[in-house]
Length: 220
Image (cartoon, rainbow, N blue to C red; front, top):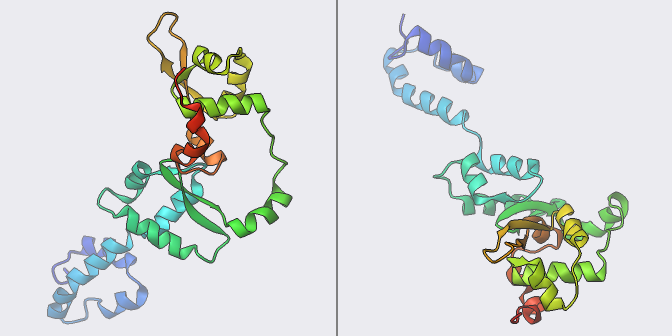
């Protein structure tokens, strides 16, 4: 026997998804006319209850990710029609009094320990950070300032030889990457900084380094 405009098969699919108290209230013993009036609301309830809360989904994605979550990743997870800025704003509000916060990093967003708790956790959870030697840090800053840049160009600016070992060290730490070769004789590799570089030094973009890098951007 059909229940209003629903068949037995349709009811078998939708009925179990409804809360028991709601299912009992609308079971077919009710007047068919009343049932028809409620049918659209019931189907809408079932459809929306199967769609994850976009704010919670965004939080889960940020929590699960080992690095910054880009706008493209957000759109793939939440849907192209979702207002990502509005979702992120709600995430920020929900984490205001928690032990972590949402921050922009590179071209995306990530959760980070609340600043007032970072020092206490660092003493317990982290090993002392490995500091880069001065010469290696100088090379890293030159790459950040002049990217994409080749090894000979770095050597010319520093007026000193640059060992492959230094580039391999920075690449191994994920701070720089090869972005192709320069179309000149010998076709030397071009080097640029990575998103890991931004995250490691707590930067949203390279623009935040402008005051520091200004003197490194002159002509070769």
